[in-house]
Structures are given as structure tokens and as C-alpha cells.
Image (cartoon, rainbow, N blue to C red):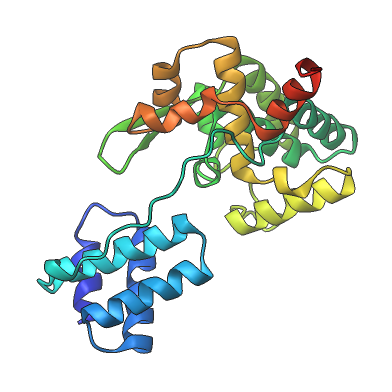
Length: 267
């Protein structure tokens, strides 16, 4: 039945990673709990709540509910866990630390990683989108990508970054192909990028919790709104389906809130 479920998902408009996640979750439930009934489903939900973050819990429950739809057992669907929305952003690299990291990478000759950090912070690219950037896209100044809904999202490469990246490409004597590759000419993996960024964080005495790929996407959004307060445009640039997702960037980070409180509260 799980194999049929996987085939069913493969025909839907879901990303490969999502399909894999759904199949893994259903397999995990069936192996450990057996029969699909309300008692077992609630027990599994309890296990998830005790062992995972709430966002992960809801992703797992979404997979289970999709499977229940598939086997025509919608009446057994589980309710999602309410995630209380924080009124601040957590673990976002500061603009000062971002600039410091960039300057250190450049000074120490880590040109590839200098551009990786710059590309993520200047384009708002997800790490999976960063992997798709080619020399040809840098020369054109943008990269067009299809979203899950079949829409085209354009990832713009700003002029300053484009000019410097073209010089770097010329120095490497590369004329085409993926921009960020390892010494074997293969694209860098998402895991490899994340691990190397942590390495640089430790090397340069930065907080490793704020030096990870998505942190630079957050930085892009924060910097963009500070310089051009158009949240609808930012939502388009980031590929958000709902503008509500983008509203989080109107909030201060936890450290920014602390600094403001420390500065103004003297009573």
C-alpha cells in the first residue's frame, strides 16, 4: 500500500523531498504502530509531540493525513498542533556580522565561499536555488525558476555582485556551467555548504547558530525592507505564495529588541 501511496504522490504537484518525507513518515508509523486506527494515530501524534519541534510535528501529521485521504479514511484525520507565532526573528545573522564574514573570507582567499555568502544575502536565494545558479545566469543578471504552482520566479543578481562575480569567473577561465562546484567539478551539496559555513563561523569567532544558509536569506529580507519598504515586492522576490509569510520580516530580531530595550528603558 505504501508503494501505491508513493506512486500516487509522485503524480501530484509535490517536490521530491516532500514525497520522500511523506513516505518515510507513513512507513515509520506503520512499522511502529501497525493498524491504522484512532488509538494508534493519537499515540503516534503523542510520540511526535514529545520528540520533535512543533513545525516538524505538523509536517509529519500532514503526511499521515495525506495517507488517510489516500486510503479513504478521512474521518481519522488528525488535527494539527497550534504553533504560537513568535513576535521576533530568531538566529538571524546581523548586518555587521554578515559584512565581517564576507570581508574575512575575501581577505583569506576563500573566494568561492565569499561569493556563496554574498549571493545568498544579495539575492535571497534558498540554498537549493543557489545550487542552480550557472555562469550563464550571472552574465544575464537573473535566473528564472518554476515554483510548485507552475509560476515563474525570477532571482535577480544585483549589479554590484554581478560585476565582481563576472571578474571572478573570468579569472577562473570558466565559460559555462554551475557556478559553485567542488574540486571535482560537482555541485556543492546543501549539507556541505551548511557544514562549511559552520566551520567558518568557528574560525572567525562568530555565533554558529546564526551562520547557516537560510540566515542569509533572512538577512536579504531584513536589509531589503530597511532600504525599500515594499513588502509585496519582497514577497515576490522571495517566492512567497502568501504575503503573510513575508510579514515576519517586519519584526525585529530578538537581539535587536534587546538592544532597543537596553537603550531606551531607564526607568
